[in-house]
Image 1 (cartoon, helix red, strand yellow):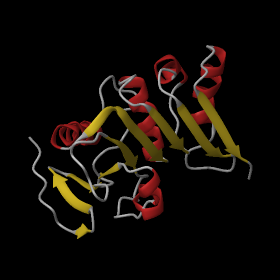
Image 2 (spheres, one colour; image 1 turned 120 degrees about the vertical axis):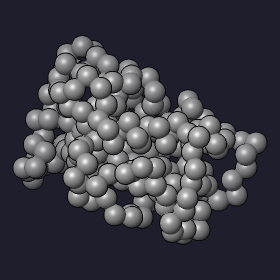
Image 3 (cartoon, helix red, strand yellow; image 1 turned 30 degrees about the vertical axis):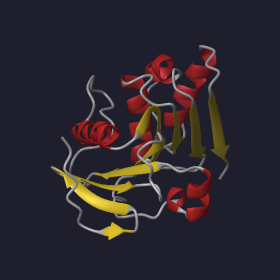
Length: 198
């Protein structure tokens, strides 16, 4: 069972903790427990784990597309979102998924409309999640993330939009492109890659 012990509350956004995992949860305005809502999971990049304002919280967006937003935060010294070479999920990701699954039991969340979005280290976490849990998420987006080419078949089971900048020297575009190229090779249809030059 999930116990949300709020540290700070900003309107319908609440900060809480589960073990070492801190997280924010945004509940749609005028939440109606008789309706089912989607949830967007946001995975931050390395060292960028502070409270962030995301466009999904904006009133105009929430009025058109009311959704929960779950933003888990891992301290930099506590591993990574991606297990990368491991067969199992990383410890922070296991904790984040435990909270996500608990949220879907506590609130009126549509388990068929779970979405995940990650940047940098979080983008790697997106690739890792889609590989290790194919079909759990309805769609995903990765910004300057990446993974391994042999993950492509599992990743292709989830619609994915990948973004990368050509001049990225922290996470080089090859990390995204090797997966994208393999997805093209196997005929994956529900994916897109946007590369920003320079």
